[in-house]
Length: 372
Image (cartoon, rainbow, N blue to C red; front, top):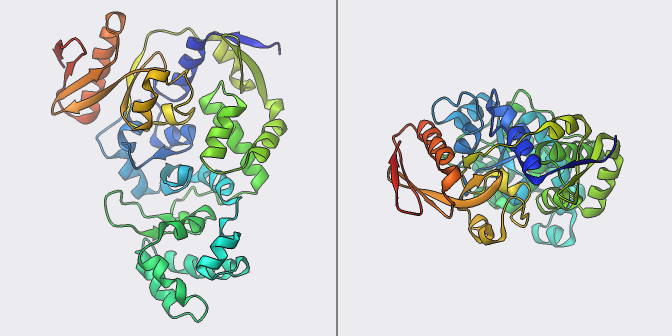
């Protein structure tokens, strides 16, 4: 196939559609699978997911999906807790575990636990959480009676999240389903679609293709941001995985800049005809975090600080054009140029009102308001 040439507006319009922001997805799992992971802290995962659904339903869909086992939450990207699809989570966890943090000299010395002892400790932990969700104290109680591991009981009793994370990365534990309750642990197999932890190269290939499929057209630097910065997968591995799946990719030149796209989506991209779209998203949404705040396609330099700090973005034609916040029943928008986007902005406030189940009034930079 000859190199495909498209405009930035085409590329971002395609991505808006791919991430279910133009035409909603059938369910929450489809949304989370496309995005790979949805931030729980510093964001609003329910709004992020429901904004992408064709039939959003009432608030609380993410909580319902967690209780049903359709979704899971665990430690993954950027060292934080993420909402993930059980059938694909294992690939990202495999990448995060590749650094074998538990085998580092500093770790071994601090916890007085050799890398060779990890399999036995993991077996104990799996046995406790199999009856989950259980509080971390349940693991601490089990370890307290162990001659080998009693000194580690306090790491669960506290609990020490740093110590817990490698168990999550290796598929031994996931976090319990309650978003607002106390921390609990359970087996990831509580989710019926849990796919386990695949081999590292299999996981790497999947992760590269999934990223390009959800966030394309993308560059190798984007992959390094997502899989390297997000999961510490290692630049050398990421470059190799990219080369090994290159036969499924196609080169795309976007306004003179080289990017890559899934070959199976190339025709869709070429046929994309962008129209003006305004989207209101929660802070730390994957639309921004996926490519990263350094990506000036999505985050113009004047908006980088606000996006890094977690402000709610107003996205116009795929790029951050301002921020929004709720002040009671008023949606206060700043930074957005009015004119041609006013009607689209009003329609998006209507949508937000429906998602939140309340009446909202729009206040724009000029001070004008419109009741919704």
